[in-house]
Structures are given as C-alpha cells and as structure tokens.
Image 1 (spheres, rainbow, N blue to C red):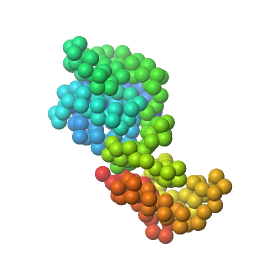
Image 2: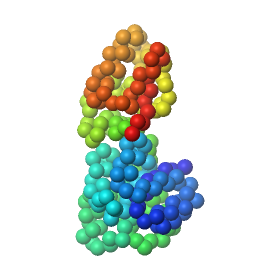
Image 3: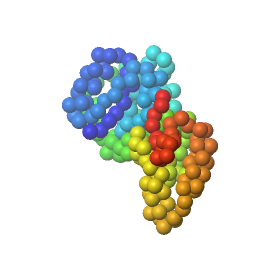
Image 4: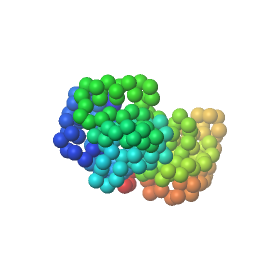
Length: 223
C-alpha cells in the first residue's frame, strides 16, 4: 500500500479523493491545514503529497517551497481551482512536479499519480523522519529543522540504524554489533557512549533520542 498526504481544507473533496484512492490501494492521510501537514511530515514522509493552493493558514506555493527545502525529491502535485497560467507557472516554480486543476476526473488524477511515482520512485523509502530530524538515504545527508548537519561516518550509521528502528528500544550490544562489529571494528561500550553524546550535541539535544537506562537507546516521535 502506497501512502500519501492530501492537504485540502474542503472536507467533501478530501473525502471523495480519499475514498477513491483507498480503493486503488493507497493509504491517504488528510491534512486540513498546512500546520497539520508540517506536523505530520516531521514524523513520517509519505510517497507523495497532494496539495491545495488556498488553505486557511497559508498558500500552497509557500508550502511547496518549504517541502522542497527538506525533501528535494518528494513528489508533489497541486490539486487546485486556480487554473490561471500564472498560477500554474508559479506552482511549478515553487517546486511542484505536476498541476491538476479542479474540477478533475478521479481516474485522471490516479493515472497522473502513478505516472509521477514511476518517474520519481517512492519518497517514503528515501526519507526517514523523526521530530524534524530527516535522513535522505539517497544523498546520505541529515538535517534538523531544515538545517543540514555534518556527521561522522559512525554518527550517521548510528542515527540511520536507530531511525530505521524508530519506536523500538535497541540494546547497546545490538548497536555495537550492527555499527562496529559487522565491519570488523571491535570497540567497547565507551565508544558508543561518546558517539551518542556527539550525535546529540550536533542535533541540538533532541528529545526524540532517548536513553533506556541499563538497556540501550530508542528514537520516537515526541511532537
């Protein structure tokens, strides 16, 4: 099942699109405001975003630029009544991959979604996210609150491993095995402690990176 976020403040349109796409094996999360969408994206990155232009708390083009600041390859389709050529050009200049004008046929929207995903791949597999910390696995980059963070190889591998297991407590022994032992670098517990401390410092002491006393560590969303 492919998950997508639909940012739309009209409940009737949102419900109709959601019901149709879920019949086509999509998991659709509805966001009635831009703030709600930003919050959702900090916790999980979908395969694709459908975006309305006129929202109660802002404009879709500003939202699109914000998306591009953190997720350069995340597929975005505008779904809006604004069909003027200037609006369409502005939408693409803001970073959109496609632009669909209301009213539209659901079958056509579905076809355009599939075509875009064929070209771009699944963003949900490329990006890992937790409380605003984002890993772009294709580029091997890490950002926190839209600011790119420089990590050492061990720090990156540690964060990646914890993010891939978000919500699970990973023992210190398992982390040492997966990050160091598997590569033939046998280190002691102190190396892990120091690496975690440095990682926390670089990320600004994030609340989502938790220590489970006498066991290990866990990444989980807190916002």
